Image (cartoon, rainbow, N blue to C red; front, side, top):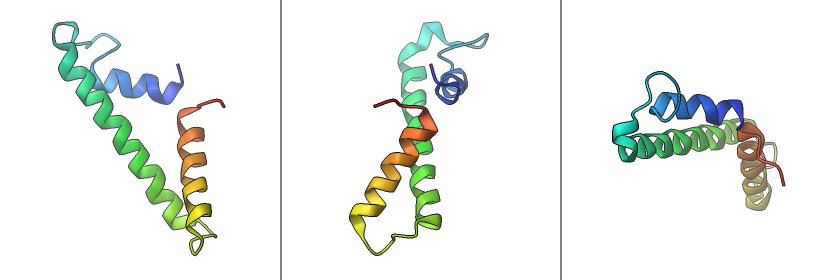
Length: 75
């Protein structure tokens, strides 16, 4: 598991000493929300630094690459 995903899982209560085993549905929802927020932060970051802002296909590709790198996703 990617370190960032592991930290989000801990924050959500899915892993670690404060895990919410009895309420896994709530923890899963929190985990999904945290991942979405991280993706939103990645797209905001790209919006600030993307040098191809005029060409949407470059922007979309750059956002995809940023999210992939942020979460350590392999092809």
